[in-house]
Length: 186
Length: 175
Image 1 (cartoon, each protein chain N blue to C red):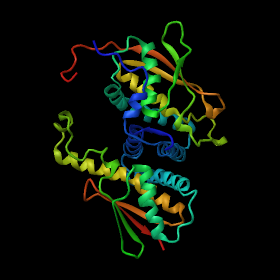
Image 2 (cartoon, rainbow over the protein chains, first blue to last red; image 1 turned 180 degrees about the vertical axis):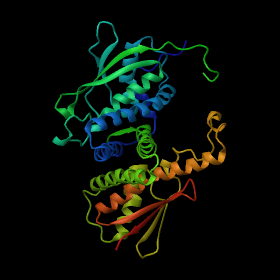
Image 3 (cartoon, each protein chain N blue to C red; image 1 turned 135 degrees about the vertical axis):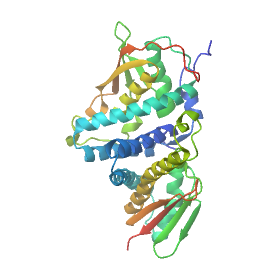
Image 4 (tube, rainbow over the protein chains, first blue to last red; image 1 turned 60 degrees about the vertical axis):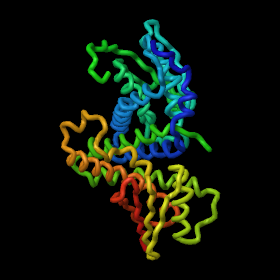
């Protein structure tokens, strides 16, 4: 039996290489800005940010599993908790919380009150409809897909749109059964 | 020290930025991809340099501004200074980082895990790696150009990686 994983990502975040968050925040902002210039349509920018996030999530999950030392999550509930408490902390240095579970335990909200992506950000009126942080929903979707969970991730609250927090609704669509036999390197 | 994020956040974002522009948006137009990536770097350099010079007196000449980039600015981004600065005293400066952090992310050596290299002749892989590397470097070149522009110094910036893992940024100030 694998050892129980850490309850929070604090220790991991303290041990990983860290960089100045301004660089990250401003780079992300500049990317969104350039996408708006190049693609013109806000809807298309939302889509591309989500796609970029998805690709990042697909890769980042390996680092997450390697460094976090979490054991297999028994269900989707535990998975969501691990993302909020360990995942967000170890990469972004902030903690999220999980709420609003539905009766079946297949849909919940991940709530973020502090979000380094939006430091210094204010959206002009021309960006109505933009999901500025859409990269995050993509990351979660991509990472979960790598651990056999097909999800749909949507924004329920967005501080840049005047809400009091960032809230991502994560809905489990399908849990793909793992296939045996594993390949040699697993 | 202000807020920090894991280095993987920046690394993943840059990798994905380069891949989005050079393989998804402009797969057959590397010049356009390079231009957009450079423009993103420029914007970042502009804003960072504005923030880092807030409490400073104006720089008296070009060399002072370049030294600021080599020392303070570089340290904020990479926790180290530029290792070597050369100039011809006619507006060209060469800033060498003997181990440029953002190149450690791109694999120049043959891939370590065998599955990629098997169906990929080493030569092709290497050539591809060098193209990817060049595409990546548009971002830091843009950052330097943006930072200097903000200090009132219009210039052109290119990168030279003939001496890996060292990377030299060549700044040509426009007169």
